[in-house]
Figure 1 (cartoon, helix red, strand yellow):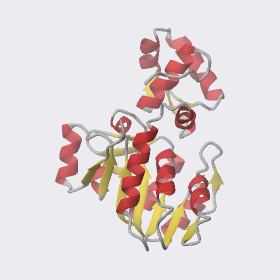
Figure 2 (figure 1 turned 90 degrees about the vertical axis):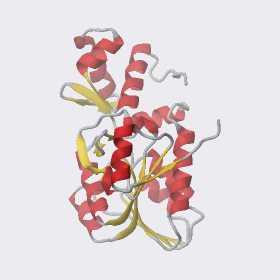
Figure 3 (figure 1 turned 90 degrees about the horizontal axis):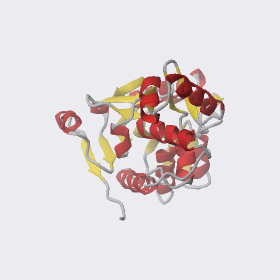
Figure 4 (figure 1 turned 60 degrees about the vertical axis):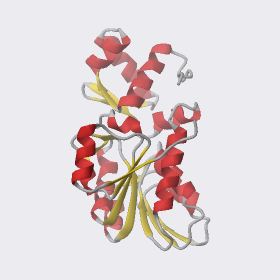
Length: 261
């Protein structure tokens, strides 16, 4: 899959592609892969961070939540078909009459679109983009918390949002993650968004995890739980043997979707 120009600077485009694929990279790794000095890598990171395309961390850089993914999706390099197939499989799994938590992200937005033909759903989401997809359906009750609104992804975060979520018990949680470690650790990039997700996980009967194959190779900093807590993993590729063993040991259903070639 070729990389369409995103910034007009080939090195910056390559840096964005690396971070989009891996989630987080340190300065030394980036400098080596880009064949530049660490000082140049730092300058590139600072510039792209100022543009809102990545998040600068101490010693490295990571995705700016959905900003890079969304920009890449518009240029047809964000595994859109995989996300759609995963979303349809998750929607098929959720019966009518359910109460559903939905988190933030491009994959769960696809799930929201796929749920539109359902009946009698109560949906609690901390994502205005998800709510906007679903609220016009008269068969749904859509609820959003108060809190701080994130401009880059429509997410609602903060103590008020976490407390609101804690007042419900959902049948299903639909969520993606930033990365999945080989031991099953589920990781996210943003500590503020992670707080709401962890509360949703604690208040859900079934956790439905959406993860395309890039999540097995990404890296993120904030641990939100373990894949052993999930009811089912929806993915386009089976993970490596170590993670498959964790899934099997904890009886997590693995639903592998196929996409049109």
